[in-house]
Length: 375
Image (cartoon, rainbow, N blue to C red; front, side, top):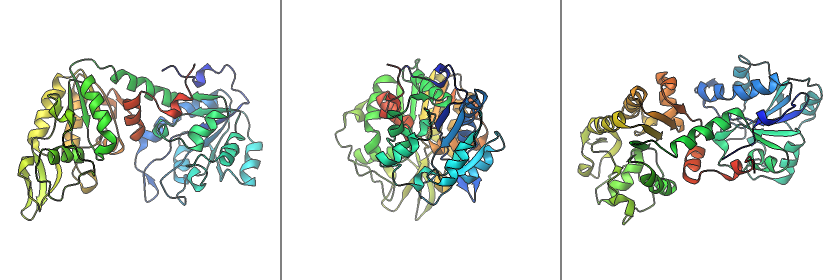
């Protein structure tokens, strides 16, 4: 995929650039919990500022309209001179735009405060389009969403890829043509959305390990009791990929039930128990494949991270960080784990995408990214 990129533009000084950034960063009591995503937004912002563009940043945060980007703005101030604009539909925002000088950056409030954003409303697209001469999309994490700020605007303005988005695409393209031996690790839940991905990468990779709640669906298809464990609505009964010799699943699991916490093989789970994580034999099995691999691709945790089951995910992360393989990982909880351990730099690449990463790996592009292609 060859994309139009901001470095292709010969003259940016004085141009109004509408920059779609990826600032949906988890907060706890107003404090940023994931600095990786924030720092990944900086190269494009700095480049545009150095080139003398008048930059308007648009982004969203959270799921509720009342959520605000102000804590993110205050954190960005530590790295860049940036101005708060507030609601982009107000007269105050328009006046602040008129006062912008070359190299200024103005940040708008949470896009999801406007209903037109998620439904790609033409009137809201027109409002956004009026803010810039050029559109730069640097929000790879939202590249699977055809919203006003990612898709609608790119149809109306000259559209270019930002530096971070371009890096994401470049690195993911590498693992779509892996060196062998290759290992794909997939965790999380919702098998109904990930089955095509599993089938594709069983063809591309030497081994595909399915962990997390996704593995429960495979156990269920084998006729094993899953008790109170999380399973998808989809049935995998008769699925051909289950017969693949490349497919790996946990060989032991950690459960909780009437007899407390136990480690057992997945075929021994009882109706009163719930699986929360992979067991130690599974971690050791993965370590053997990780040591031999030349390419490792990973998305999604293996345990119920929200309940404190972090061991299998964190130990696996350390094994990969120590390996010689070229490694790419992504997914919110996976990235949070490696950031907490402060080992980000030990991987080949850490993607800020979760759903967008999986969508790109499955399809090789998205409708949003198609609009940035240099045809």
